[in-house]
Length: 425
Image 1 (cartoon, one colour):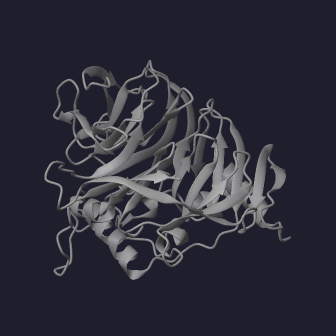
Image 2: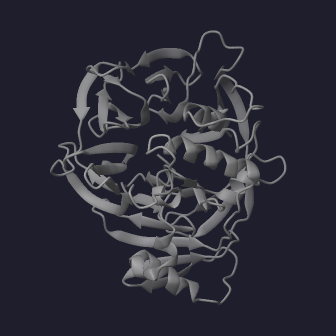
C-alpha cells in the first residue's frame, strides 16, 4: 500500500469542486504582501490564499534532550518499528510498535511502565497495527490494517472489544483495509480502502475514503472518496499515482475539525467541520520538489515490493516529483503545522526540518526550524502534544527493510531503532 493522493484533483477542474477552486485561485496574478492571506469566496467556500513568506518570519524550536531508549546500547528495551506516539492526560507516553504488534508505555521521565497488546487473533490481540488513537469511550484503539478493524484496550491493556466500522453491504471477493485513525473533539476519523476483486474479469475496484464514525460503528460523514479501477488483463501497470491518497496528510483538531491536504501536487489544506461541511481551503505559493536519486530509489523499491503482491511481471512507475506536503498536524491550540517536501529533504544547513505554521483561521503565520541530530530523510519526528517532541531514528530505513522490497548489494543492515524524547522549551 503506497500512501499519497490524486494529482488530477488538483490540475483538472472537471474532476470536482476542489480542482475548480484551485484553478480560480491560480488566475489571481497579483502578488500578495508577506504573510497576508487573501480571502475570497469560491463556489460558496471561503479560500485563504497565502504568499510563500510567513507574517512573522522564521523561528527556531529550542529543544532539550530528556531521555532516549532503544538503539545498540540499550539492552532493556527492544523496538521493532515505532510508527506513532501518543501522550495521555497523565503525560504517560505510548509508543506504537507496528512490527511487534504492541504498545510500550513510559512515564514522562522515560521510566518503563507497561507493554499492552500483542500479536494474534484472539481478544485484545492484533496483527501489525498501522496506527492507534484514544477512542471517544476512553479506551486505546489499535488500528489493524487488514482485515480492517480497531482493537480496543483499556489503559492497563485489558481487552475492551473490537470496533468494526460499518461500510455497507459486503461485496463478494471484497475486504476492508484501514490505514489511519485520528480522534479529537469527539470526532473519530478513519481513512482506508474498500477493495472488491472480480476473479472472472481479473479486475479490482478500490475505493479510498476518509470518514467519520460514531461509536456504534455507523458512518457520520464521508469527507473524501476516490475510486480506482484496476484491470489486470489490459497491460496493467502499477503506478504511484493510482495509489495516491492523503494518508499522512490529515489530522483532527481540538474542535473535531478535519484538516487534509487533498492534492498531491498543490499546497492546499481543506478544513471540514465534523459533519462533513467544507468550511475553508488554505493554500500558499509553493514549487513542487523533484526527488533526488536516493528518494526516487526508495519509492522504486516500495513499488517493487507492492508489485510482488500482484500478478508476476507487473511493471511499476514511481513519480519523479515528491508530494508537496509530506506531513500535517493540528496542535492543541488549533494551529496547523505542515512539513513541505522541500523543507523535509533539503532543509537549511544544520536543520532537521522546517515546518510551516498557519493560524486556525488560515493565515501563514511563521516557519519553525527544528534542529536535532539525524536527518529527516532517514528519521521521523512526532509531535505528540504538549511540550514533548519525539525523534524515531532509522524510521525510513526500517520501513523500507520491512516492506520486503529488493535492496542493493552494498546496503547495510539497518541499525536498531532508537527513540529520543525532547522537551520543547
